[in-house]
Image 1 (tube, helix red, strand yellow):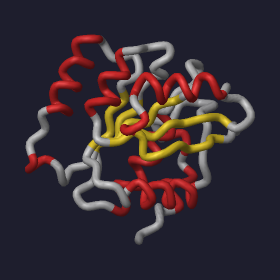
Image 2 (cartoon, helix red, strand yellow):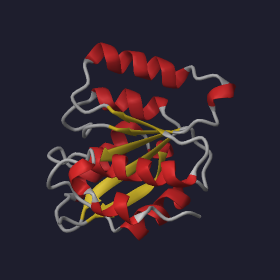
Image 3 (cartoon, rainbow, N blue to C red):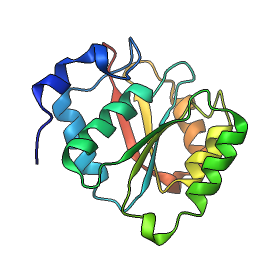
Amino acid sequence: MRPIPQRERSNSAASAEPAGAPRLANLDLQQLWFQVQRQDWSSLVVVPADADISTAGLATSLWKVGCAVTTPPPQLINCEKMAPLAIADLIANLSHSPASARDLRTVISIESVLSNPLGVGIARAADAVLLCVRKRQTELDAAQRTIELIGRQCFLGSIVLRRT
């Protein structure tokens, strides 16, 4: 395993992470990447339980770890604020990906399905989903409703974010 170089860890100004995004320690992200690798997936959706947070920063950070330790490197798709036609194309591509493309992994961030139900289609078309909840802030009802809308069988698990 090759840890992420220091220049990548400390250069937050150059990252695609939105300001104020929940963060995990770098070691936690590396461990998370290897935990999700235990399952067979080519597309992984990162979905927040809360309607008012973005998972783009977490997905980007997870993707960076994947780029550092995986060959070929994964792709990253941010579906937040994506147009409905683009979402329909993505769902079709995820649903009909050929077996030859299964080695290429894609990390996808979506908005909460409570605020944008189009994300349900993306999550259901993907191979796996990670639910993101905020420590001491996410309402249990929001997390349960998100799981219910997408389908329990789609989830690899959940991740607890702490605010910075």
